[in-house]
Amino acid sequence: MDALRTNRPTLDALRHMPVSDVIALPAEHLALLQTDAREALDAAKRMQDWIEAAIALRYDRGMAPLRACGCARSSRSARRGVQD
Image (tube, rainbow, N blue to C red):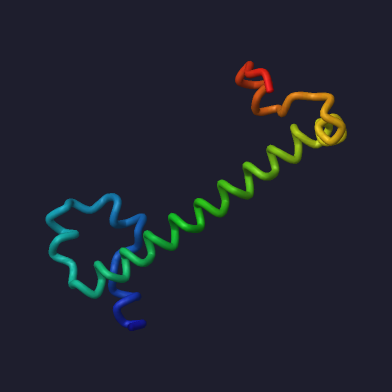
């Protein structure tokens, strides 16, 4: 399997390849590239979640005490202009 990994193109290289060259790749390379793409997508989703959590902590932190007592609308509702 390591031999396939060293001879096959990377996902970045694949972006610049003509479809005819991609079609000509061995099935094993295509399967490994598909796995790489799935793993990259999963990693990107985890990074998006991480960034969104950081944003929520940064901008929603001051609202928590007000929400606990029911004194404030949620920031999401406030941004949309929706009454709770």
